[in-house]
Image (cartoon, rainbow, N blue to C red; front, side):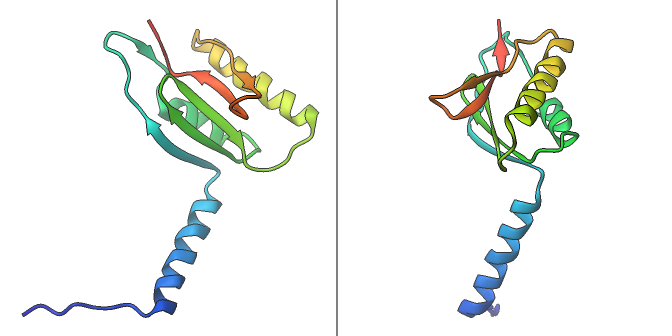
Length: 117
């Protein structure tokens, strides 16, 4: 007969607190809502985007949402820092012959198209 180990509420809270601390410590957090891509589409690999974002000084959250990557800053930055971030992201995307990054007030995020035909 196998033994089942139970957790106390305090042990469970400690595990959750450690997991949340590890999640918050990540420079780039990724949440996937919808990652389907049409057949024969050229797409921007998430790994490439994450590699670029990890080199930036601002921690971000990337949400994979249908045809877009939504990039949200996780800390307040000055307008100048924000413009510099957008410029460097657009430059990175242009080098890969991709579409530039744009701010969407409606989505409250920087929008980067995931794929194109």
